[in-house]
Length: 384
Image (cartoon, rainbow, N blue to C red; front, side, top):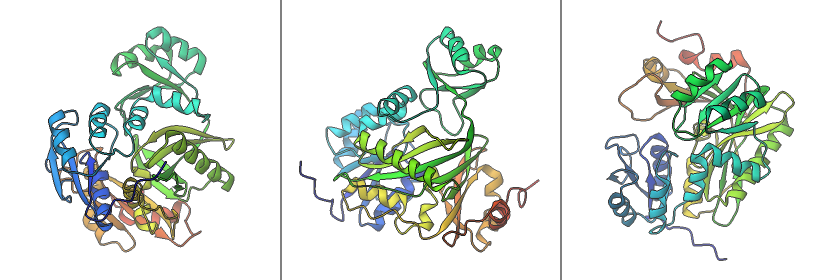
C-alpha cells in the first residue's frame, strides 16, 4: 500500500479540543509551517489563544463538525473526552489521526484492558463490575484492598474509589457512574513510569525515554527523565509501548502509563492516544519534543529519533497555591516555565508546568531535585 505524501507547509491541522495539549500542539504545528484550527466548546480556552482559527461547537454537533472538517486538511484530537461518533463523522470527510477506533478503546477501561490482554500485554488483575454481586466476587478474587474505577471519563484521580473493606462497596458502587465499573487489584508497587511513542504513516515508530512519575492528590506532580529504574526495565517498557502502537496501527502519538512492581515486572495501566502530561519534559530536554513528534506523525512527515540531550525534571503547577509563586518562578534561574493561559486558578486545576534540565547522567537525588525546584520545593516557598 502506498503511503500518502507528507502534508505541505500551509496545510491546516484540525485539533478537536481546546485545552493546553491543543495549545502546545498548535505552537508545535506553527514551527513546522502549519496552521492550526480547533474545534472547541470553550471560546477563550488555552488553545484558542494561539491558533489560526476556531470553530465553536459541541463535539457531537454534526453541523459544527462539518463546518470544522471543511476548514481543515487533517484532524487530530488533544484529549479523550470527545465524541468517538463525532470523530467517525469527521473521518468520512477528512483523515483522522489517530483513528476513532483507537479513541474508542482508550475511552473505555473495559475495552482497553481487553485489547491489551488480547495483544499479550500484561496488566494488573481486573474484573468488570456490573452488579453488586460482581463487586462481591471481585473482592474475593482480587483481595482487599482494591480500586474501583469508572470505565469512562475518569482523570486526575477522579472517578475512582479505594475499597478497604466489604462495607465500603455499596457506597462506592452507588457513587461511581456510569456503570459498568472496573475493579483493579493492587500491585506490589515500586513506581509508575510512562513511555511516549510516536508512529508515522509508513509504520516507523520511535519512543522517548522512559519517564518516572509521581502523583499528589491523584494529579501528576513530578516527572523525572530518565526513570531511575534498571536498564532492562526501561528496555521492557519501551518494547511494550512499541508493541501497543503497532497493534493499534497508530498514526500519531500515544502515552502508555505503566506500573513497575517490586520484581521489576512491567504492567500497563492506561493508554492515551495524544500528547501526555508526563511527556512535557521533552519540550526543553529534546531537539524534537512530544508535540512536534505528534504533528509530524499526523502530517506524514519523517520521524527523527526521539533523543534527549539533557536529563530533566518536570513539575506541574496546580491551582492557586502554585500560581501564587509565578513571580518567584520567573525570577529563579534554571526554572523553564510554561503557562497554559488559563485565567482562573481553581484548586486541582493544571495551570502550567516548569522544567529543570541537568547534564546527561546527572539527574540528582531527592535533595538535589528539591533544591533545583527553588520556590516549588516540596517544603519551601509555598504560602502557609
